[in-house]
Image (cartoon, rainbow, N blue to C red; front, top):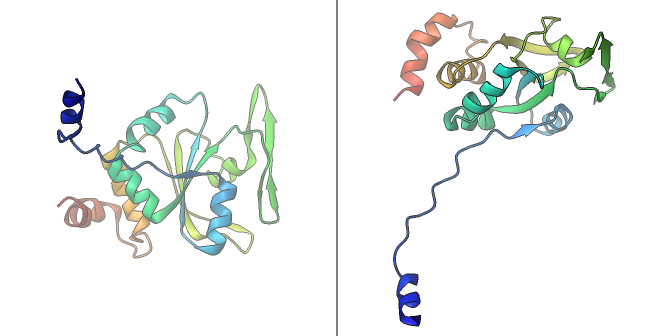
Length: 182
């Protein structure tokens, strides 16, 4: 019996599968603090607990290894509950929960989304984040997006094509296929 156990110890086993990349989610306060030392763009996933499409996006889009890896390289990724009741302190600003009817909303979510409260919405922000008392929102992108489509969006902003004034259609049809679909 001991011989069998010793023999089994030397049988080669397959290497464990590499862990799929997962998005390193931060609170807005953690991302803000990190950005003071190492500036980076922000990707803010604005969600609610009751939003079904938010859950689908978490499960399918943000769990895609290609999407997660790119987000971790280029952005501070933040989950922001649009109905979160805890105050958020960023620098000298404090953002509070605003009670409204049976629910209410987080003041910061409303500001970042320019009052257009639909979920999910991903808000892309510049490295400066909060400059001269104003948030540096690049773009708020509402709705559910599949992983492939979302990868195009995150690379468009992550690689600064928006600053080059590259039209989105040109990026989708010409630049993205040459850069990311090899």
